[in-house]
Image 1: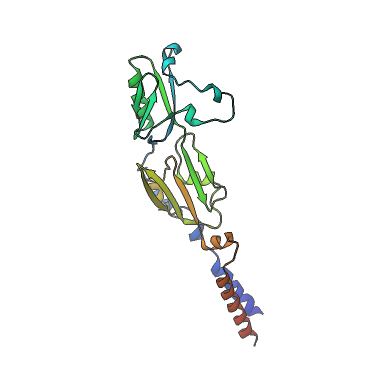
Image 2: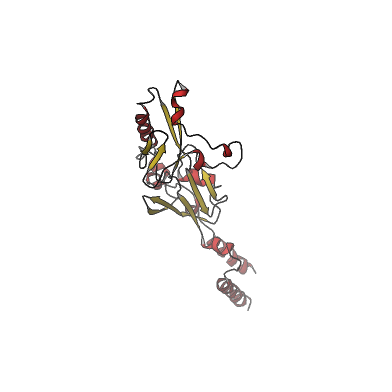
Length: 251
């Protein structure tokens, strides 16, 4: 019986994950006091929805340029960003009252603000403009505790922050298999991130863009746990090995 217990203990120990498989940022000390190689500012893209505020010391001067909200959407709970903001069309333009089309796609927020100010300065000398991306959202799926779509108000989020919003990885999430799916100018780009190493801090995918998808692959154990039918061949093999061992040791 002691031999059987010993074999069972060895089996359990061998099947357990090691610290190397679980711990994040294992070589983080290598990045201590190193320069930050990348900065991030969101780029406006086609189909983005922008919230644009225009102000002046004389409010009456800016009234012709302000988008008038639809009265039917005022005071109800059915908020539609597309009706409150400015949609960037497929050509990369927004339509501003009086001014007409303004090209903003492939521009940063700061560049878009300056372009709009330049378009208005002939009409309003002290104009102040602010631009926000209303649809800055990321989606986190897979082996996390709280999957979903998350709106990012400050338009800046990193992979660790997105995973934190999703409640972190479950025990079945693969730390070395974080897939990022991103659309860039009509093309899909993908990347695989390994959270166990701090090298991804230097990746172009470290900061997420609007509408990025983050998917955490489940481990093999996680896949089996989530299924309605267990891994029958594997289970039968395990039972056969255990019974064979018991028979040999008790003869």
